[in-house]
Length: 289
Image (cartoon, rainbow, N blue to C red; front, top):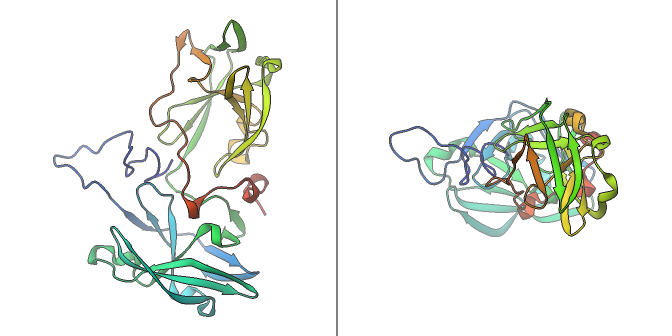
């Protein structure tokens, strides 16, 4: 979750609310200077290298980086006759991107009839995430989408008593779980493997990818499909939960200090949009080159 995605403050499913007298508009877009060097690679060429990036937060979307035309290799852009209309930002022109022997249609766009209030995006181009070979901050590859500066993860040790059951079987019993707090979400509880009855788990051929934690593997517990998961090689920022196991409280019974847990509203992962779709294949270990 970040500023405008999932349950963020500017998202339609926001978990909190602004304490103001008058209701805010249904949609709020937020643009800000990224203050980081970002580069985009396509066809073995750096098509843009910029320290003047504007990040756009739009409800229901991951953040999108907009680059000034002056920092883009002009020969890589080819204006197409395809245009669309953005509900807030007006007419949008689309470009093909060409570099070397590679070419991708509708791989970049520019809002060409911006309203006065959206002048921060004037003269700027965005590149479709999935159409490019890679995005970087300095020399480190970004995966999944542009990093959201408002997304945060905190991991805390605790001695609370967590028990997982399915039917009449105890799956896990621990007094040393880790609580993982991720921006806008309720806590997720991770159990050390030594406190889990692993014979009850069946690993399945299914994985997902989190841009902040890494590749996630899943387990069935009897007839409860995908009831548990684990980041076997969690990224360095969340290494404390590497190989720990977490359980889905709407698929198995999870109790914390004898209180049964429920899956809170908005806790489920929201599917990703087409140009921001996440892929296991684009997740190098630790997000590093």
